Image (tube, rainbow, N blue to C red; front, top):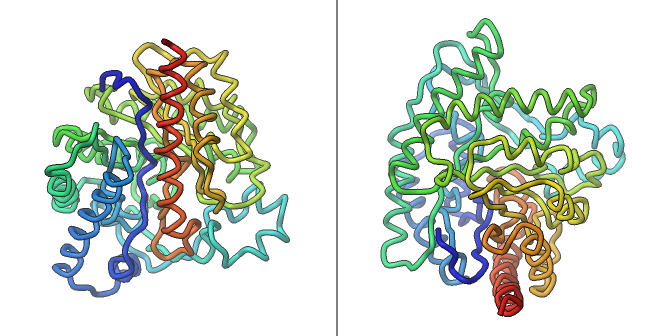
Length: 391
């Protein structure tokens, strides 16, 4: 993407789904019977509508809203062979974490509220044989649905998210491979099929990897150094899975998860930034709009952004129902642009806005779309400042 003489806009992937589709996704997630043709038709309509909505708002780099997926991780339950379901598992992303330990009263009170993933039921998948990629039909449907929805649309680009090997490793249990390293590598080799297919279809590949940022929070027994060592090993495996794919075709997203809580135990970006840049991607998407991390733009004064790389800082957040004023969005964009160069900044969102169909939405759909409108207007204001200032 050449410099368009303005700040481009995008988001983190997951967007609101229509109610009719949510019911079908919940059935799939529980392993209940459903009408596949009804589901496929509902997904096609939802992708068409969500692309139309993004274009109407003015998002430059769009996606399919992840409309077909039960979640950004659990969708692989039906795309990876070698696993079997062991029933439903209720699992909170932050149970037993530093957050829960520091604020137990808050999390007990908020257990059924939005943004906590409390009581989310997912299929418990266990690896019992060699891992293979078997999701070709579902992936091809995602590709064809997005291509059809983009016909006649004027966009700068389009991306398809795909989960990282580390996320699969975290949520699925290994009973087959002798070591965790072998298990992780097998996941990576299987997911590589999806990664390559997305890029070969002409789309940008987005790797979703909140595990890099959340490992420290979720493992109170681990030090910062131990968490970074864990992350570095997973990055090596991810880069192995991405080998041969041009970095400019890859964008990487990490975040601190769906947790509208105090967030005092988040690993600071000062620890993560250089590690994140070791990933063979062309752009990096991360949280920068929520109050716990908004100040971290300053660290990019000292962290050297490699040539040809771009940042996609979140300038609207999923951690608050307040709709950011466009002037504030513009301020956030300008800060990054003045540090790393306006040509190296794409305005994004902290995280997705509809991550799990069974969980209470952290952000109501009407608010999510209002935030994206503010993002686009803020980028317009920032562009006026940045290009006017340059003469």
